Length: 520
Image 1 (cartoon, one colour):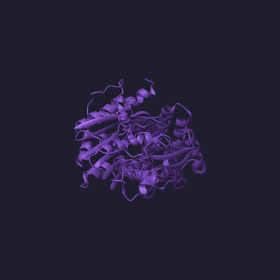
Image 2 (cartoon, rainbow, N blue to C red):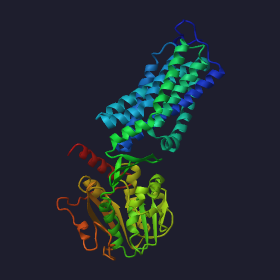
Image 3 (cartoon, one colour):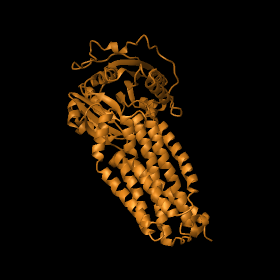
Image 4 (cartoon, rainbow, N blue to C red):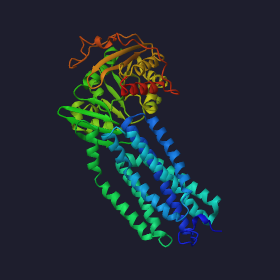
């Protein structure tokens, strides 16, 4: 029995697809399923890179994709004729929009104030087209196999394609191609699927030459535009960063960018400033010399984060230091600290010092293993704006740190701004207070960041044990106590500890960031 919906414009019913036809269509479904998931991950990760709040952007993007895919599936029912031709046209439009999606979103962020409307339009367009693909091909396949078997094979193939895409994106596509080239590559794949389907079914399509011309032109056009990726990236990054970019890299975990203007070298991770060479000493000297001068012994030290090597540089000023373990997840950052000449000058080649051992692994797992006790633990992590980082500010994580701290040892963590992120700052202090006997807030003024704060902890009372090195510029041995002076207009707050199951700190940080954006 012929499905009346599939009668083509000529009035003749289409031929049922052969076994070879069905295999080609199922393979097409396998490919386009992977492409559709990669578009979701691409937009989510790009939004997180540009605006932070990974949980929010991944959740919103996936929710919008699912909703508009439903809209697309609903719209597909109104395609009554020329199902293969409709699929080809959908695929061509999807390849073009998807291929240009990252470029459009980058431009919307860099040159307008309408990133979110642009993001909504891009997501809606891509997901509506994606939602139409599967119903159209399912109706073609079911002409021979029936709805039950045809739908089962289509969905099974779709899920396998999605699995492959979920592995390709974080481990291959994003690290090696970056956002722009990944979008171009996946868009080209969609267009090639359209081209193959047009050629294979050219005798069954209405106006096959027109479809062949459209798909071929779209492939060539997208490939030509992709050749200018380097130029596009340079233009967009000059809009995103105030200073000239001298190094840019997309690692498995984050976007790493280094800029330079005159004597000012800056490191950005996912768009967030990590240091400026003009004033980084104001950040690193309190972070290192307060715990180092207060620990009972100072032979072994642990740095969690700090892949730029600047905290290690300060620790190496102590002659008593014999071993420094530096645990940073991202080898792209530690390689930069070890290999970029301008950064090597700044960190005094600290990461090449034989006393320093770099471990590119997750700090949580690294601390779970048995190993040395440390006299000083310095936690130099980014602000807790994602769940992956916020878990390293929890009670559970600090207990793992305490287990590796020697008797009389001191731990310190950066805790964001006590002025701009007041709740987040005191949440870190409350969290540490549940684990350690002694807790001390530490303050600094860093022009690039404004008022900045740390929390220093120990299982014994704080008592200065040794002199601060003479070559410091901000925290000196004669004038270090000012870092402990509490601002009178920022009294301490009693806040819940940051637990792994709730991650309240991430909420506090997001609220503080939003208040800053709103000018409150």
